[in-house]
Length: 276
Image (cartoon, rainbow, N blue to C red; front, top):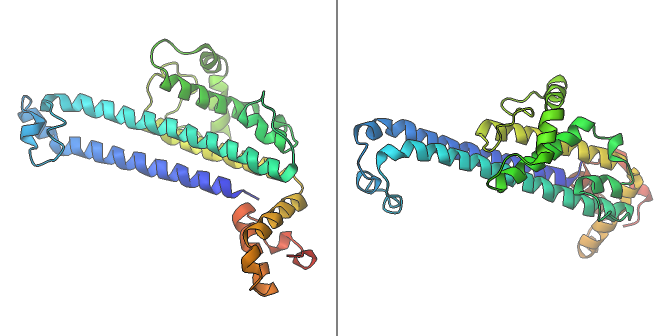
């Protein structure tokens, strides 16, 4: 089983990955194509040298300064993508809480994090489903996101504690289960910036973690309760359309809704026992 929310989160990750890759490609290709112009005309102004570009006047600098600006731009792209990734993950967790609570009727605990509340409303213990290293990974990603959004000062104590006391173990955990990091190093204290390879690692991690969260919480709930919830939503959403459809057509529509919402099939439900 998997929720439609997970599919949507995957789609967001793919969009961010495509956007950051495109931005990096365009930025680095511009630099590559223009390095000789920069070297040969270091004091020329961009507004003059690239006068046919409609943005050149608002971006009026000497060509010799372009390499540094390119580097800064790449960092900005990576940083913005990282922050957006975490935001999308947070939204996924919040939406999961609402969805699962609607199925189980359980209330969230206002004193707990969104991550813990996903499991609370599923009436199960997070520690029965996620490894300590996986929880530490999520905490690291969140705290590093906070570090990136707040300028000035050194590494915050909570983040530094993870890096110093758990960083190596987290690195080893992901390597040992077949998801080694290409650039992200949980033991590295030089984290004021971020590069594009680390962003790709974060995408891989959040996809893996969200999939496990999704599967764990759904399997903690009785399948019949999920189907009951899906049926109630189906009746609400298609009340008018069902008036003009045959039983066979309605069953097909319901199976499509089950597949889209929870990746369930006709083998998971007894259609003959359902009253639409």
